[in-house]
Image (cartoon, rainbow, N blue to C red; front, top):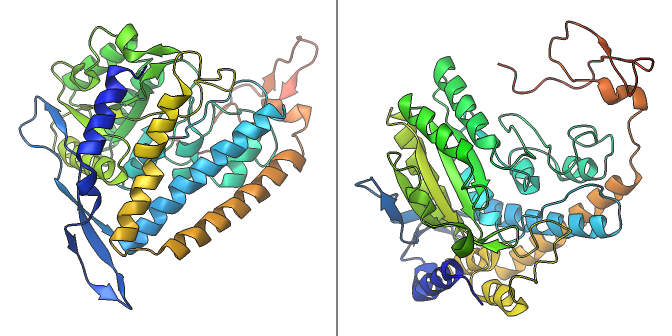
Length: 400
C-alpha cells in the first residue's frame, strides 16, 4: 500500500500535469527555442511570508545539461548496482535512482563559493559536484583512479566544496553547520547545503544543529530528502510529525516537490538569497522516491509493492517529466535526447571497464593523505611492529 506521503505526492503531480507545458517561450533560433519559462510546483511554507519563484526560466543549454546529468546518474547507479551484484563492490552501496532531480536542481543554483555535505547516498552528488564518472566508479571498486584512490568507497567521496559522503546517520548535519560557520567566519558569502534522509530526521543531533545555526544565523540550508522510507520503515510509522519542513520550529522551512528539477533549483536560489542576506538558516523538505532498496542488501519489496514502484516510475519519474517539458517547449528534440542517451551509455560502459581493470594502490599507501600537516609521520599498522610512513600523494582539497 502507498504511504500517505507517496499518495499525496502522486495526487499533486497528477493534478498539476498541465504545469509541464511552458506558458511562455523565448527567442527561437533555427526553429528551436533558446529558452522557455515553466510554472514551478506549489511550495508549502513555514514561518515565511514569500515563497520561491512561481516561474522558472530554463535555457536550452541548461535543459541539455540537466537532462544529461540526470541520465548520467541514473545509468551510473544502474552500473553500480550491477557491479555490486558481481561482488566487485565491497561493503555498503546505496543508490540514488529516482532522486536525481534533487542534486541536479540544487547544483544548478549553487555558486562557486557554496558547499555541500550529504549522507551515504552520495554517488550522484559526487558527480554533479565535479568528480568524473571514472573516479566515482573506480572508487566504488577500490581502484587507484577513484577520487579517494579507492580507500573510501561508496560512502566517502569528496571534491572541491563537497565534504562527502558520510557513513554515520545524521552526523553530516552538524558538520554542515560547521562548514556554514566557516563560510561566515571567512566572509566568503557562501552557504552550506546539508542533506539527510527522512530516516535520519529524528536524530537528536539534527535539532542541536538547527539550534546553533539559528543562534548564530549561519548560512546553512538543512535539506531532508524525504523518499518515503527510512530503510524499510515508512515515514508514517516512524515519525509522529511527517511535516519535516516544520521540524526546525523557529527555523523557517519550505516543502518542495523533489521530482521537478526546476522547482528544486528555484527553491535553492531563494535559499541563497535568504541566507546571504543575514536571515539565517532554512529547513527544506524535498519529497522524492527511491526505486532501489535502502542499500543493495535490501530488495526494496518487502515493505512496499512492485506496483507502487511502477506507479511512481510511470507518473512521477523526474527524468521523464523533465524530458516532456523540454521537448514540448522545443528546447530539445527527441533525437537529440536519444543521442545523449547513447553517449551516456558509452561513457558509463567505459567507466565500468576502468572500475574492473584499474590497479589497486600499494599497501604502503594506506597511510597516505591522512593528515594535512602531520606532526608525526610514522603511522601504526595492524601491529606496532608493522608501521607505515605518512605520504603526501593527492592534492589537499577543502583546506581552510
